[in-house]
Amino acid sequence: MKKAGAEKKKVRRSVAGSPQSGGSDTPPKKQSAEKDVYLLFAEKVRDHKDLESRWAVLQETRVEYFRGKDFVGFLKTHPEVGDILGSDKNLEAEDIADTLLKKNLIVRCDRVVKTLRPGKKKLSTWPAHLEIFPVQTFSDNDAFFVWTFIKRHPLWQTLLSFSWPVLTLAICLFPVYPHKAKLVVLYSCAGVLLLILCLLLLRATIFGTLWILLGKRVWIFPNILAEEATLSELFRFWPKKDEEDPPKWTSRLFYTVVSIVVISVLRHHAPDEAARARYQRRVSNIIDDVLEWSPKLALSGMMNPQPEGVNVTNFQNESASGSGSNSEVPPSPGGADVDFGDNPEDGTVEDTEDNSEQSQQNHDGV
Image (cartoon, rainbow, N blue to C red; front, side, top):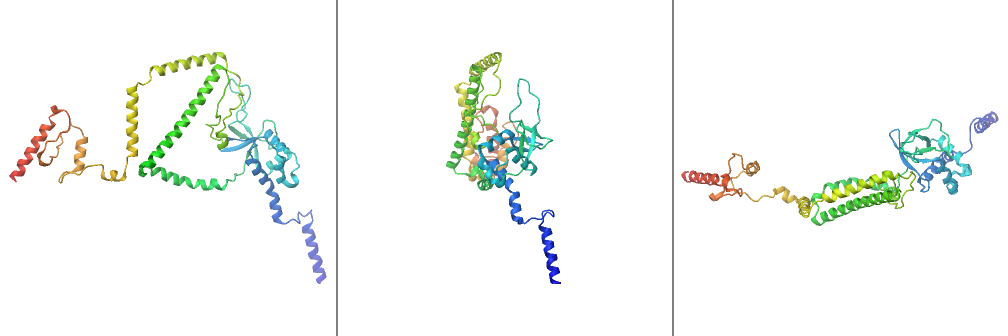
């Protein structure tokens, strides 16, 4: 009986381990590791700076994508990246991409706009809107592929995300900063804003001058206004290559005349020194109100001590309603004359004197 039971156990083990039954001798951990190899490869390729990629809109979602021909050229230039795949490192780029498609790590897409715009001879190299391609096979001929997995963020970006609430609270508490701290923040922000405006004006001037004189489109800092550009691409000085046709001489002549007219009008209507001084004084007053704000002054209302028996709230409301109102003015202490304006003809001072005398007589009678 024992021998028969042992033979049955051996048969069950052999059937479970046979390739026909789908069994495998590799442990489950190794199988999961082999499944994650292509995910590690995809993360490595996506984070590599030599694979050019862009951001686009796919079904109302912003996605990161690359071109098929760039993927093939990247693997030829950097064969060491394929070492992550282990036994599959010697596969062709097309086979690796097809495996990524089967594992849903990438999705093939196509451009939404497939017609040429007026004045263009070829389609955009990097379209801004994509749609899913019906056939999910790899191709390096005008094919685009979107990364489908969530990119892992480094630790410093996670820690930086927690600093945004602190920064928001610091901005809200700006009025209670010390005076020197306010000056530092004010001039720092004004300097950065002035630098950005000067940079935009400089690049626009260079572009307009070269476009009118030479017919070439040259944008210094080409990615300065790009939303999807990385930090390294944002400060890239070298301009992009002009892929469009040169403009016609009639267009250049037209915009030359327009530029001359606009500059002449601006010089003719430029503000004089008096207007500039008034504007500077007005702006300075606004800035001083912000810098000189104090919690103590805000609580006290920046008011002097008022005599007893005088309703300060009613006095402020009546004085703010204007000199033409018929509201009663509270008498000043000691019957002193109160001057509410420089115009003696409005009768305000005389009415005040009569009211003061009448109140004094009433007090004496009591």
